[in-house]
Amino acid sequence: MALFNDGRRMVYGNMGGEGQPQSQSAVFSRYAMYGQGLQAAITAPRWLLGKTWGDSTVTLKLESRFDPLVVQAMRDAGHDIEMLEDFTSTMGHAGAVVRHADGMFEGATDPRSDGAAMGF
Image (cartoon, rainbow, N blue to C red; front, side, top):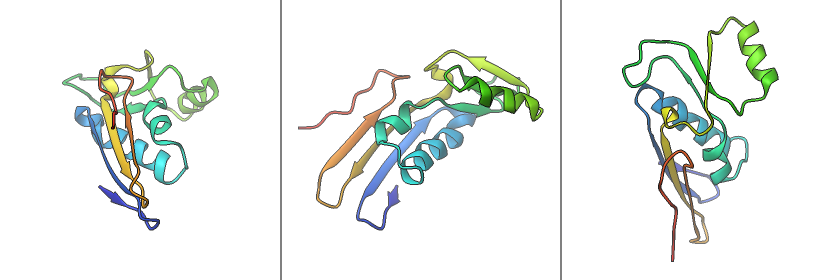
């Protein structure tokens, strides 16, 4: 849970084994620090550094929607890159709800899963 100075309250989470803290921090920082909308922060391409789901590789796994210049810069920096398909469940499934100071709720869910954010 995150509490913002403007009165917003955010609950968020992500399943995903060893990549879980990486994806959670990406979603949070995209929304809270870089001003992306909640759904955009969850939908944006993800990375995973290291093992996942018992896999023995410790590569830097990137969804293929990353800018090719970013991918090349990571390779040039010495990373062993493994490109994965877009919206792969390897990156886990995230969800978030924000309660705004005025009482409005905003929800977002991951296109990598079959969930939905709904209200009434």
